[in-house]
Image 1 (spheres, rainbow, N blue to C red):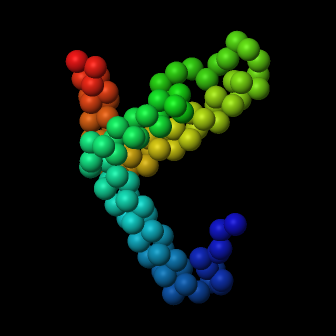
Image 2 (image 1 turned 135 degrees about the vertical axis):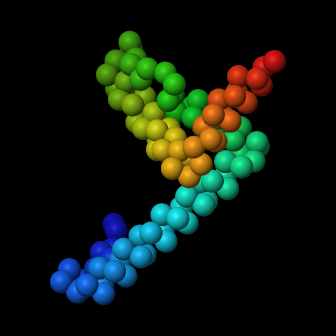
Length: 105
């Protein structure tokens, strides 16, 4: 459960402090994801996770709806990773795709 950043919404100082805290947390998160995408080794790991999540495939399963729903959940995790990478360092997505394509050459 997320703790409220503001105890009194009428207090402008609390609002300013909460806003500042959110900006710092977002920057810290983006830095972590950007650092993660700098290394080829880590990009390879991310690519494997994205492939496992099935973000580049349809989630539909002819077996039954439970498999489809399971696949949708997995791909949602993959889309979360893609969004984090895109926010932190957009070029890392192109690097991952390029390296994947040329890995088998």
